[in-house]
Length: 258
Image (cartoon, rainbow, N blue to C red; front, side):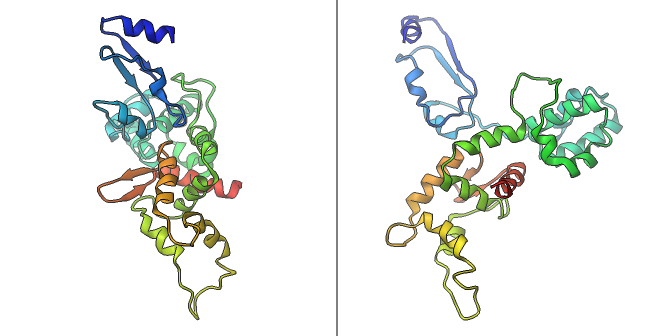
């Protein structure tokens, strides 16, 4: 509180920086000086924090040339045409995700296996995205999979189940209608029995009210919870959701773990 009062009393231009403010359960407003001067910068995976901003910018995946340069720089490899061609294939498989590219670069730097990385990745994806190399090019403490696992652990069971269900759909074009229609499935003479579909029906029942009717508000709460950790992306103009392809693969792996 003393620091907030001090900033409030200073008419000069100051900058208050919140880095990685990812916890959706934390009310950042409690940490803002209550004044009309000064500047606040927030980096976060939580899209809900946009309510505090006069302007905001969503950071998407990298463009291929930038991703190639990042990989080669992280891997301490020369920027020859040959290396660029190999790197282009690697960053494409990594879906141009910056953290995954940096992690791959650190591994290549230690192993010297730029040319053989894709073959290793194909057989050891989970291991390579879970382990942080000893020598790193940044101070970020978590690996790709660790970042998502920590977020996943914060979700309610209902939100976890929703994300896992989405991992068995295509990662683009996920809609509420898919779940609503499945929840109202009508059994026929040639359809699977209720016993065979007991588990998915129990999961879908979590989105129904006490009368057994689909509850759109419940669906909004669940999807908002998952969105707060950037594990899914909302496309409001189309009323659709999508999952980053790497998150999609990882989310499916959590099913077997449970």
